[in-house]
Image 1: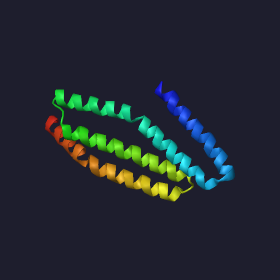
Image 2: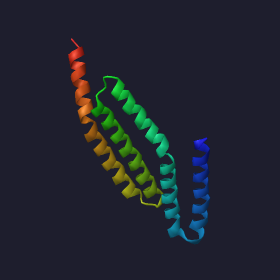
Image 3: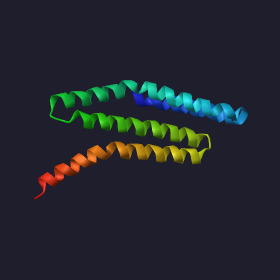
Image 4: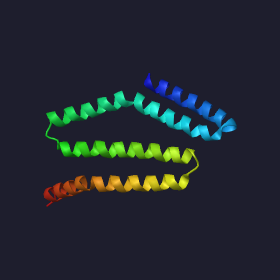
Amino acid sequence: MDIIKIIGIGFLALILTIILKEYRKEYAIYVVIICGTIILFYSLDTITSIVRFLQDISKNKSFNTEFISCLLKITGISILTEYAVSICKDSGEGAIASKIDFGGKIIIISMSIPIIGTTLESLIKILP
């Protein structure tokens, strides 16, 4: 079970962080960053299989591949933004975390405008 391994990595990092905060507080953030990176790389196989599945669906059906590509980019931006925000919050920099969060939301909104526009055009065509 992958989730058990991910939780184990997280708990190990938690214990190391608690110990380091007592003796060498400046090194604790490095443990958090390394833990997040290990979990991200450990999850890459699952992420890759999801992307392949979506690509297969888009090839077999009459889906717009630009939309799927855009949705994958938006998902990646939201995951990376959340990762950066949590690291900033863990290091006590809530102000920087909120700025990163805001920037990520603006980028996601700007990337979703074509999807929203096409959806609205389709609704207008359907409605009498």
